[in-house]
Picture 1 (spheres, rainbow, N blue to C red):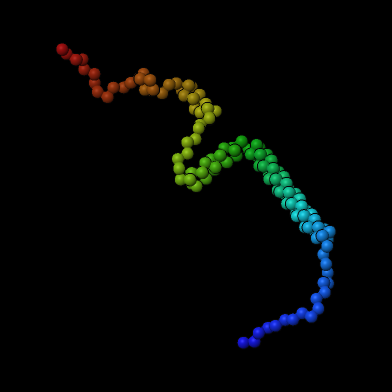
Picture 2: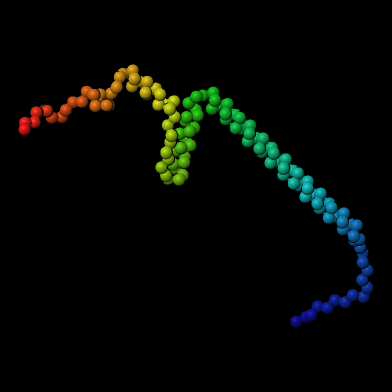
Length: 129
């Protein structure tokens, strides 16, 4: 096998970097990093602004059509039920139940609701002692 051998007869420093030059290089790197951070913050702020604009547009659409909010609510419940495979208990607002209660008041009480109008299944026979 051949061996490699290097020999130096004369070595002259071509460039010498004094401390002030090294400091300038480090400061330049820090400035570049600060600039990257600044740009990242601007991009993040623009994304937040776009997200808020999208929410405003969605609120306008949902506010213009009364049933849209209820449909979105039901869609969200469907997604929750499909993802987690669990039972979802949904509280029913009284505003939804009021029309049915008013309908019951209009028609009158349902027969048998409180025992009134009870129709016996068998003929009542007086008990003899």
